[in-house]
Length: 248
Length: 248
DNA sequence: CGCGGTGTTGAAGGCATTCAATTGTTGTGG
DNA sequence: CCACAACAATTGAATGCCTTCAACACCGCG
Image (tube, rainbow over all chains, first blue to last red; front, side, top):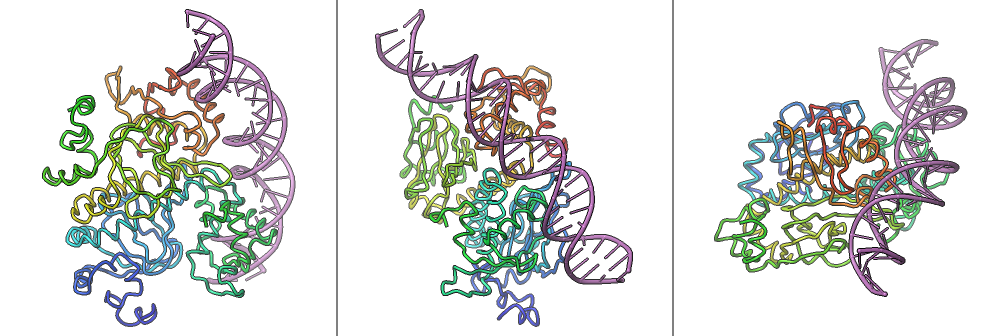
């Protein structure tokens, strides 16, 4: 029932999909899933590849089966901002719109389950539960976007970097727990380059690097390698992120 | 059929509501509107008053009939960020959530059409068209939030202020048009104080003031009084906002 | 080994903030 | 009607945080 099993045998069979319950498809009953089965297409994308572009027609939507996708917007002079990070089992793409308003690019190796837009939108009409589930997901994305606006507008560089780590530590499965309390020790992988982190936080590469160093010196995080971190105390990381204990 | 007529006579009758067609209720058929009629309650709010709070239970949702509402988030040390501005006929409040994730405060005098949460959510189940309309609205809010993230993360103070003016000039009804091309001359009112603008843009009051002065000196805008502006050339304002002609 | 990509560190400069003073506006009561 | 207080907005000077520019370290790979 895990990823490997699915990848080995029944790739396109929704019933065996690893992320189905978490994804929007979880709204469908077993016999309704058959509808989906007929239109989906699995696809693998390499890191750095563009998945959706502002410039081409947005002809498909997708579930993220595995991997991390960054949604970016770029100003005409090249300044870039990442406006969303998506992890499995998030839904990729904007329903009901001729164009996406951003670029979607694979940050890591990504596995997608793609739906042709026209047919997926038909399903949304037929199955209100499916639309409802997508709606709830969109509401959570909006919550997250607004939370991020506070970070972009009002936090210092150090708080931004720490907040980013808090977000990742929470999203990531907690791999190892040394202490008694699982919350006290968390390890997480960094799926993005320093340049991507900078584009997420509205900073430069150099500032991100410097702030990571600062957090390291303060022992708020330990840097195992440039892509993996260890958090001795989630409370201290949250404090560095400008989150007081009430809002954790 | 205008505001005054409605206010004078049939305040709570949805059929005569000035914003009905633009608001989510527009999804309902005439006989379904009656459902709404039974649960709505009109309410007027004074500038500065809190409408929704993070701390109290979120027991109602509302349509904005007139006025401007700011959605704010505050860090524990008092730093504040406005994460959304809402104008009539926007929908206020988060469906399907025990708590709102922000404060909603009246920026101007505001007229609301309030629905008890529990009963409104029942209607969403009964009438998929209503939920669909709310969904589309939420998608547009997410688009706007992401656009704003680019502003907060990557634009300079001058671009931020100019972008804010572009947004207002578009949202506002164009009151007067001196030139041949209606797009070339636009006037708009500023519904917010300088402090609010600062909280919108992730700046300080002083910086906002300075940048407005700069735009004035460059003749990008004319300041009629501190709350109303005239834009001689929308193109020049957009240029100052960092929007090139393709993305207007 | 050298090369490109990624990440770190240092020094100098600039943009927005902070602190402070002044002006303008609004509404209230004498 | 005017004086006055309270608030909103502007302007100036100095500070500081982040950026910019530059050099170097690290790593995987042909």
